[in-house]
Image (cartoon, rainbow, N blue to C red; front, side, top):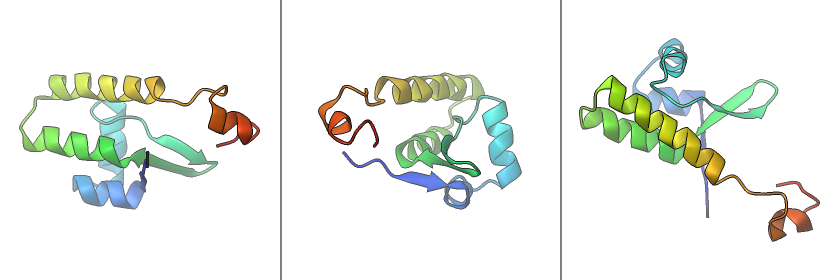
Length: 95
């Protein structure tokens, strides 16, 4: 399965918000926390960005979006590969 990560410029363009607004939404629980890609690099799963945009377009209230964000972040953890999965074990534990 292919998981695309979008960097800040792509996310701000897709969500039609500024960088500061994006991080304010994260702080308010209205956008999921970013995925760390490196020391100074973050991104968001493309599917999460699309899901949140659909929720906003549908007119969901902030409380509903907060619940959606909690669900999306929980899904990230549930779908995280385990170190004992065959493809990771063969790669020496590196993805």
